[in-house]
Image (cartoon, rainbow, N blue to C red; front, side, top):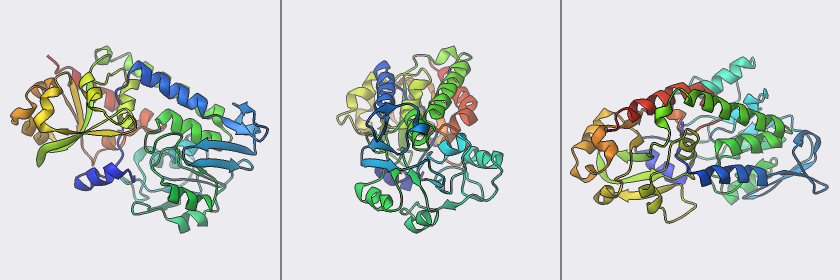
Amino acid sequence: MKKQLLSVLTALALTVGVTACGSATEADTINNETNMAENEVVSDSGEATNDADSSFPMTIEHALGTAVIEEKPENVVAIAWGNPDVPLALGIVPAGISEANFGPRDDNGLLAWTAKAFEDLGVTEPNVFDDTDGWDYEAIADCEPDVILAAYSGLSQEEYDRLSEIAPVVAYPGVAWATTWQEETVNDAAALGLEAEGRALVDETEQLIADKLSAYPNLKGKKVAFFWLSEDDLGTFYIYTNNDPRAAFLGDLGLVTPKSVINLIEDNEAFYVTASAENADLLDDVDIIITYGEESLVTAMQNDGRFSKIPAVNNGAFVLLDSNEVLAAASTPTILSIPYCIDDYLKALNDAAEKIQ
């Protein structure tokens, strides 16, 4: 991923991605549902329709412009994080996709759930291109796409304009890198003429989450913060806001954003806030910390007096995500990663919740 912050943070230890479950308030949930409803597909007659399959040619409005799709796409390219999972979940084999750039990947550069979806569709050699250092415009053009899916991405206007010379591009609906997994699924599906099917996938996945959560009543209402920090330099660290899907997903799991984190947010469009260890005592309502790292990070924070007023630190209530493990790569959720990793994620969260005193 090319998130600007992540390219800085992940250059230190990670890269990008992760199965994020973010904490959300009731208002966050309402806003997500409203965003999906407002980002309707509009036919050339100007009438909104939920039957995207019958509305070609269609236009899809997004933050960088308008995608005009003349007819139902046959060749589909999906770039950036998670977008390839949407056509695959709908039974469509993309003509080309971005290689995963975080977490354990197979020989094709795919994460486990994406690889399984290709396998289930009978594809052993998918067309995968590496765009870690910039979009491979030539490889994308060689796919002769009818549409380019990028509902969750950080495309710049310049990148969008160049990609649009190849094919219509479905970019993010609002803020770069702030598209929820629900919006990503519905918006990408709509461009394929399968909006109703995309919404059905979202409904099924939300029901799956609800069913799984019934086994973990202890999680409801726990105050969780998603950190990025390094034990080599604890002086400055970062906390993801609910604009970041990994933090927003936590709200889907019944978890809550601590008021102390909300109070740190000055830019409502930012997907992270920068915090100083000198002010860590302000985070005195954080029950659980999710972060990338190993047990030595917990020890380092517990031995650093600046973090002594954070309940999660004192109790050792951490969910540690190893960047070499599948669960870390699933922290930024997709329509395929959620069912693949939900059991492990909920167990890890519940193990941390049991340490709360």
